[in-house]
Image (cartoon, rainbow, N blue to C red; front, side):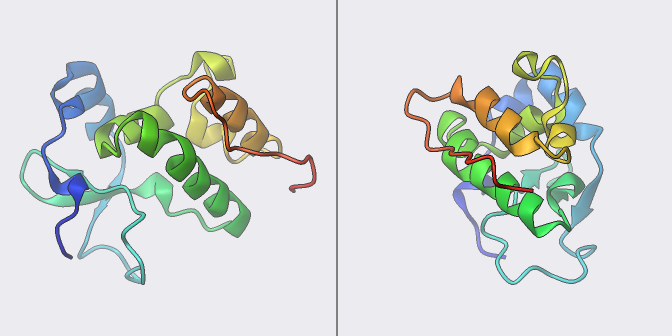
Length: 138
């Protein structure tokens, strides 16, 4: 795996609340990924305290619609707001969110109306929303 900007130390990882939440999530190492993704550039990669790069399990979504929604929200919102910081993005997906009635975003994504709710929650992060929902998905 070549180095990417995500390989740089994360200032978010120093925050004790973020660090504790993220370190509790299930992760894979590169060796544990099976099958290996053809394109890993869009994956959230975390530099763990032991120096090993790990990949949060929650991002390996089997449903193609949910995977597309997850990737779009990361690309259109979270990467911009959090400057592509993988610790901040992981924390956003795992922590309760007041815009979602204190629900956890990765769990909301699995609901029928999840994409619409997540778009509404992430609109507060950026002024110019590119997240569009037509009501026709799922």
